[in-house]
Structure formats: structure tokens, C-alpha cells
Length: 107
Image (tube, rainbow, N blue to C red; front, side, top):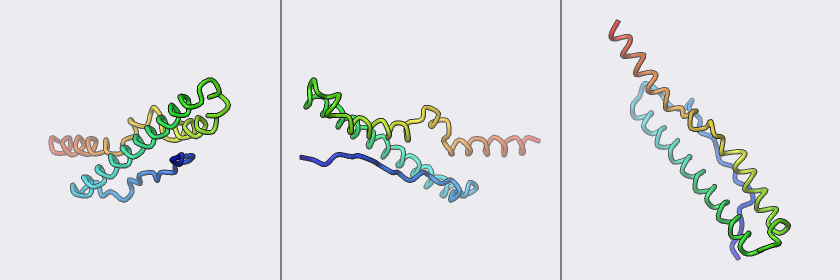
């Protein structure tokens, strides 16, 4: 039997390491940000698959027998699936900087 995920701690992306004036640093930071978001998406899918497999396996007793799996999935969702998270993309700052630079050139 395969082992189950019970917890998953993923490091958060630190934008302080990005030099916003260097295009290479920004591109590398953006790749890292996207990679970390994809990892979280895949981990969420694994939790979801474990939950539905437990429901199918346990049948009518799923409320008692799948409680630990569902709680682990719920903890993961509470921790990493904030509906406002896409709005907190640190790379939106690039657009803001470009607009400020354009405004400075126009003046």
C-alpha cells in the first residue's frame, strides 16, 4: 500500500532576493514563483486523489475511516488555497515599475 501524505510544508517565495532592475533576476524569480505554484497545485491534486480513493474504498463508512485523510486535505487547503493568493503575485510589481518608468519618460 502506498504511503499517504499527512502534511506538506512548502517554502514561501521570498521576493527580497529579486533585483527588480535586473531582467535576468526578474525572469529567474518569475520561473521560481511559477514552479512553486505548480508544485502546490500538484500536491493539492494528490491530496484530492487520496481523499476520493478513500471514499471509494471505504464506502458507507467513509465518515469514520477517512477522517484523517480529509482533515489533512482540509489543512492543506486552508494553508495554501487562499482565494486572494493570485492577486498577491509579486511580479505584478514589474508592470507597476514599467508604468512608472514610462510616466517619468513622458514628463
